[in-house]
Image (tube, rainbow, N blue to C red; front, side):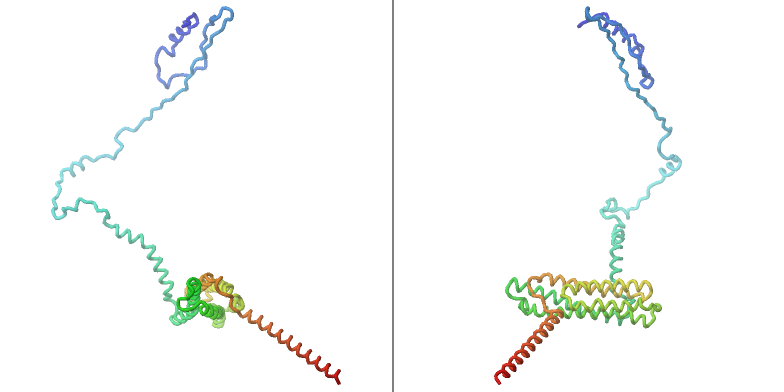
Length: 347
């Protein structure tokens, strides 16, 4: 180890320094930016060098002590009351002691009542649905006749679904379940105009109800605004009988929903009886579900049946037949004129 005068002076200076001579509290150690000067020493005879070591400056660490309130962190204990309770003798009650008296059941007392409360919302919703479809405020005559009026629509829809299933069954197995494929297709083409035509009648009837309410001056006189409902409804309904079946059913579905919205608004404004919007909702729901079923059934056999000849096809066929008759008459006239000319030439 190389020792010289510079190193001995450095060690002696560190030992005699007040910062290392006596321990102090960590929180009271001051910081100093001064550096410790050291005498220069000659490590080499030819090139003297000065040795300067910078003092290590630790970061100040503040230690804080937090004072706490004296006394226990609990409530005040009343010694007299505790002594009084301790002096009481426990009463013996053998009738309440049994093998299950100290056992805690999995289902505590009162949990059954909580379960009933949890289902209260569901029961209330079911009660609301039941009251909606019961329609206790609707006059019985209108209730029964209205439900009877949707039965033909529902019957044609269910028939369409069954015939579509029978056509698919015949295509897969070679024979239908009750009807052969050809017969089922012919019956389906007969049902199509019945369903569309009956839907047009019902839509027109729903519009005409507002005319009757205006005649009776129910909710006041509203003039053209109320009469317009009765005019728009048949104007939308009757052109559907000229559409292809799928387009006709979709148009009537939208018409039924539009009229329900109109009737609901009219009920809110007092143009109709208070029960009329709920009554219309139930009937529209049944009719709308029937239309959806018909469209689903027809969608399953779209590639297995031909398109039926609707009224538009019949009109086109009539026009073609008329043109054909005119052409035949024209040919006969020309042939007759040619025959007369030839007879005159021979004479």
